[in-house]
Length: 159
Image (spheres, rainbow, N blue to C red):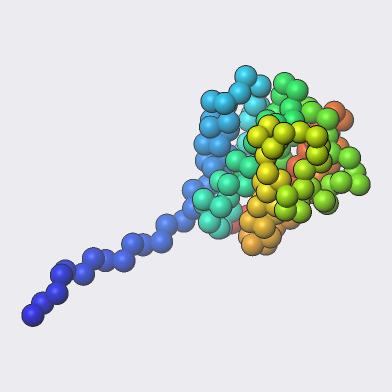
């Protein structure tokens, strides 16, 4: 007795280029804000990895920037020396240098006085760090004077 016909296994697909992920997440963020989100410095880049997880990185970083920006967010993506570098900069209050490592810890919120619904759970940047680490990358926080600049570095897949 023959069983049901076998379906071919889906062929794994390469993740979309990083710039497509960034553009999609910027479009999503623009739907929720009146702030300027400048993406003119997004160049072609490809990162080998889980497309949904990489989109989550961009989404969480943009959500964080939207939470603290005064009026402007800048997004850039470029490849240099085999490394894809995503930079998201906001013009908000910035992150004090002593707290820059701590913000990647789960449930860390720098402004304890904020209501949870206004500030988030303190998981977004921890998730970002975990995804980036799983993709053999790194994330750093720099001063943007004013604001914060979050710099993600991931191994680039050749374009």
